Image (cartoon, rainbow, N blue to C red; front, side):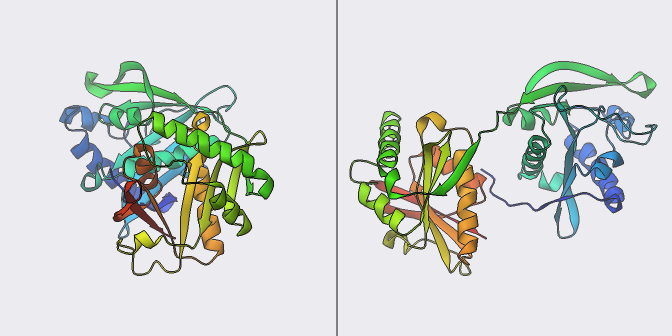
Length: 349
């Protein structure tokens, strides 16, 4: 799994020449296994090109490394679904988020940075912005080379067709779409002693679900009521409620587990916050609640002046092992604990 962290910014008009060069290089190298040289040449500008309207709208992103743009891509609230702006007259018409889908537009990656998470990072930024703009449905016209990326993100094929170009040539493309899951209205607050019964129910339900999946991470010994009440007394336990019901929780303190002493923590990570006992009710998993709580952990850690966040998770818990790298955490080694081998993770803030 790729864990490189990429810094994303909005493109500016001054980026246009660099974007033109990137697009040409990306098409010539990364589309070669899907299209002929004649098709790629005919598509430049008409299909593959810079759309300055996206830049003016503030919906086009770039990623840079060493002052060089290595990836670009964006989204649109306008009618156009592909193509540069060189032959366009006027502005493309705006669409209504209540009746039409947002568009994913113009993704290109430098060949040296292909399959290193650049496209994925930009796509996540686009989906976040699209949701914030009030859309719940996304459409795109993908190239054959780009189709696998979008499929991994849950986009489904609606139609395969060919775009007519000059000299009687056509370009096979794929129209794909995705419905965003509904927003969950939740709130995060400090746990109180009155929450202990509900928290214990949450613990028991999580333990039962893990055992049913063959994951022997927690049991009747841990986590327990003493852990919860101690966290509440220290004001380190946050709970997430949906509809007034506690469905998830997290503890953020600065108490390193003694078992972590031999893990490979970064030299500049002190002082470090530590995450313990992150849990989401089985009925609410897969809805982004763990990510919400981990983002809350970053807020708490920064408020404490911490330079990093540390945590461990059970090596045999595949969901947890996949979550933290997606959030920018790097592995720091493994440690043997009472229930087996645990993996350490760290994120510098």
